[in-house]
Length: 88
Image (cartoon, rainbow, N blue to C red; front, side):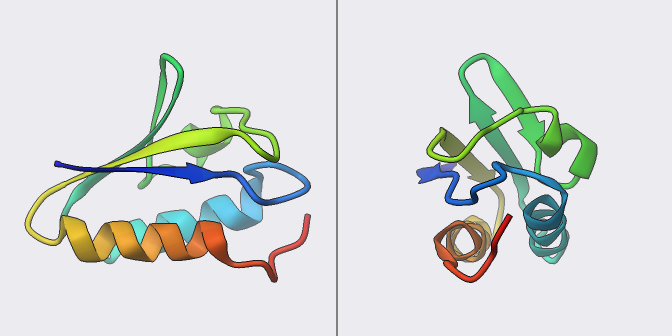
């Protein structure tokens, strides 16, 4: 299992637009992927699950990836969190 910490960079927090980008990236992977915020867990394959984390700008999240392509899949997700062109 690959574990990585990411920080929510968006002014509007983890809202629908970045959540959709995360879901699309996760669906390209065969690995199981979740985001964790405290005791809450969200599947990266479910936009509803991600939005219910209620993660605001600056919130640290733990990305967990488990599977054959976990390294590549994690990198794709980390890239989305590091993009600075998403506003909101």
